[in-house]
Amino acid sequence: MKIEDILLCSGATVLDAMEQLDKTGMGVLFEAPEGILQGVLTDGDIRRYILAGKKLEGKVSGAVNYHPRWLPVEQRGKAKELMLQQCIKALPLLDKNGRIQDILFADGLDIDTRKQADLPVVMMAGGLGSRLYPYTKILPKPLIPVGDVPIAEHIINRFVNVGCSQFWLVVNYKKNMIKSYFNDLEKSYQVQYVDEDKPLGTGGGLSLLKGKVNSTFFLTNCDILIDADFGDVYQFHKKSGNWITMVCAVKHFTIPYGVIDLDEKGQIHQMKEKPEMNFLTNTGVYVVEPQVIDLIEPDTPTPFTDLIERVQQQGGSAGVYPVSEQSWMDMGQLEELDNMRRRLEQQ
Image (tube, rainbow, N blue to C red; front, top):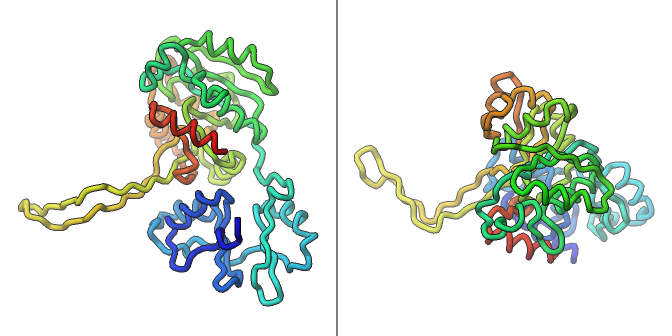
């Protein structure tokens, strides 16, 4: 990869920058007209921009950090220490005129900039997986393989990578198969099970954890993979004072038709050719405070949306941690399962 690949283009929008970040996979871009460093843009900068309610079609300058960290090129040897101290992904080295001569990446120096978060993880693993029939006629959804590894194990491994070691699986459909698989698996973490005798929904299933999970925890569905720094998600959650933080993917969708708006008389008021929409969609991953479990009526089917409303009625806050669309893989349908397999093969 060349330095030019991670330089922001002149006049770029925030949406352009998000696409460039996904394409490069480096997690950082630099604004450097004629090679002179002016600013840096990370996924965290874009997240703050989105949470401020600003539009993705806006100029990227509204999201760029114009106080980037850097070192003179002759101080290259100090880069590793600085990146460790500041917990940053990349550090540009500049000449005396402020031009970028090189960019050092934490990964290349064996620095893990991910934040740690040793929290319990609750996985909803009891659904029928009807959208994945006929696979789920034979296997429960959590054990459907993506490559050589079941989806549930992929999910667990991503949490293990940031320090999580205790996992709770809420099981129902073909639960003995799930228990047998993880009980026989050689692993560095602990898996415990909660039996769901009837479908309770994501919210209702959490009621079964009352008295078992007494600290902040991650909650995840069993059919999604998120490329996110879960430690950063947790720190964002605590800093925001949320009872629930929902990880949401930014979706950009172009309607492939001309859209007509009518006035009150039924006459054409406005025509929009292939309008674009940007919105946040729930990925199925959350950070949750333990007191939320006390708001759930036992043995009562409860959608998670109802639980969020109860939190807000109690004066608690429910917030959002945005990630890019490419950071979210969902295998809830057969077409998406094949897409997940292809993407994991490329990683």
